Image 1 (cartoon, helix red, strand yellow):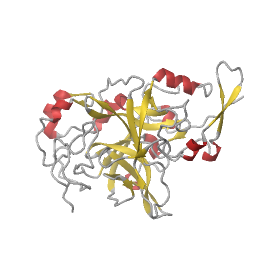
Image 2: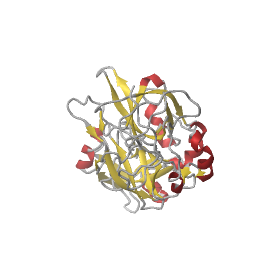
Image 3: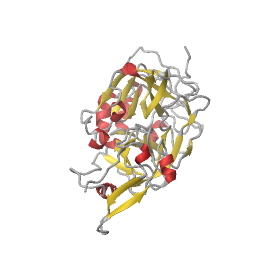
Image 4: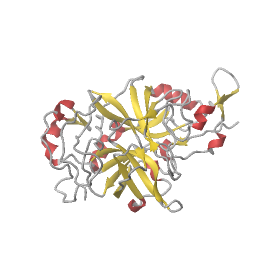
Length: 365
């Protein structure tokens, strides 16, 4: 007997319609028979996004980005996926976010510095989209290498609401139970009308690779591991990312800094006790990211000494010179104005208004 498998691609894709997600038959070891597993009705109603979360406070996640696509029927740029600012001109996201509409840059815009989706939009044009060469469109997120980079038309001016996240070292290993946070706006493919959609956050524990693999192997025979080496799992019953959150960041506290450990990728159901969310392991792709995302010229010498596989030691930030601009090389492209005033290059865990490595205030033009 074949076992139906429902894979939720967290930009809204799914193997089955959402209304059919109420039941899955799993072959459970030790029972000798097929046992029905029912999803909690509350989880089904939340399949549009972050499960078990709450409204994020202003300025806590200044790297959060929204990838938008234009919908002709509604005459507006609607949220497709999440993303994270990793440099003033680069956004990190999931490769499967581009499966539906392709890679033409003019098809997309990026919004940063926003807490409530569609409120005072300040959209930035996309110059280039780069998928990891290992990504297989036919296998989609489950095939691995579900990572992509978005190059913006020009570098952004940083502020308390817009600041890059720290990338991890290639060697980063998170023990099971490590508490991290995932954020997103969910799948909001309808016109906002009078309502705005507040960024959601939820704390999720890291799930061990072997345990996560064993859970997903319960779905039936697979060709190779379900949870590959470039993936990590996080979540628990009632706490998870879901549809519309794809591409968004999973961040964990490391040495007093928020470090991006994962990218929202895929999973079976959302918030189910047996199936944690599956994320791209960012540490596996730091070297590839830096093939395209450069270090700022003002920091190349000092940062290069302290920078190992994408990670910057927190002590370095206290000695950074003030920067008039944070741009790519000697680019003459004007800095894009964004909401907010003066800002920093990074956020420390627990910071509210303490910013280091400040840049010049955004000049609106």
